[in-house]
Length: 248
Image 1 (cartoon, rainbow, N blue to C red):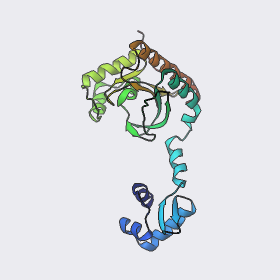
Image 2: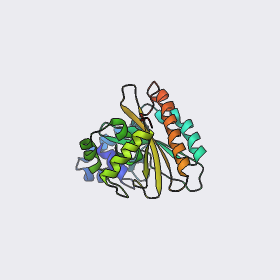
Image 3: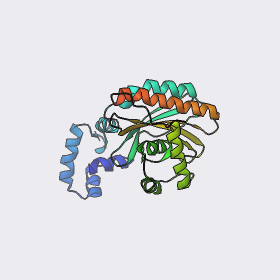
Image 4: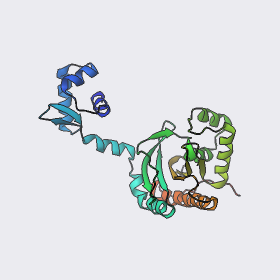
């Protein structure tokens, strides 16, 4: 694992002795491990330079770890349809056990200027519009919410009181909203997808530029995401589970 991490973090290929020195292991041991990794295509070897680099075998493992159940492939066409309809981007987030979430898929609309997010990026579970939707769904106490909020970092900071009010709005609307706090110039509406036991499994975020849509269209996008979460829950967690929404 140390060899793989070293090769992943190094821009150029390395020889056996350089790898052994960097990791403080015997060159003979390093050579044997590299031969094993080479056989499974986790590393590549250049016969001309005698140097090793990261191989394609790591891609299969990484892809499987990112989205074990193939959730994004299952609902991708529907995400792309809505992203195209509103000229926005839609991200699918998978919840992790350590109160974090990871972006496992990203569908884009047809705007000339596009919003890009890196697949595999991990964030605290309560940050952004997805975080507000999750907090609303979990029905956290003030102390629990405060503990999570204090660990968050925002590009445009907001007060805890503002965050709590926005979580309450998410409960009433059925979707969370972030207006430039997570990323300046970007607005996001988001919903949580839960399983039949009520556990949050995924999050969906509709991402657009500030001012791109009217308030009425923004609300329409939020409602579309609620429907999308319902549709996705049938395919991802086995039965339809609508986001909780208080009576208006």
